[in-house]
Image (cartoon, rainbow, N blue to C red; front, top):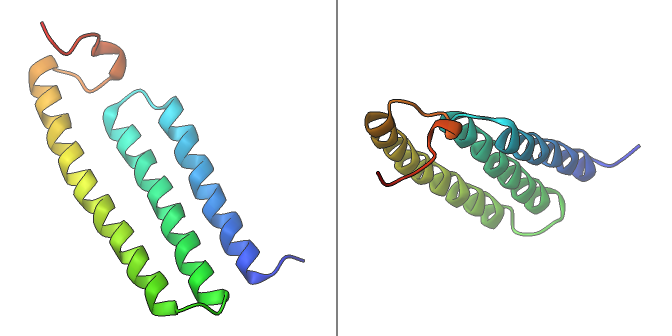
Length: 103
């Protein structure tokens, strides 16, 4: 039976895998954004679990995870603004409808 650190890393790997799968399979920009958020959450889980269970400084791991979460929030804000502009310009957020960025 794997130890607790391995279980956390398997969960983080699953989040990363679902994020990559969603990023390649989703056709809309919002779905892609959610997939990127899944990948960032997987990275945060791996960092927090490693710092807590490996005997390293737990506060440093938690601070790093909070930094990753802050970056994810800032990235989501900027991407949502871009998605709104794309929707207003092209009338759709499907990536197949966005054949050109300049008309």
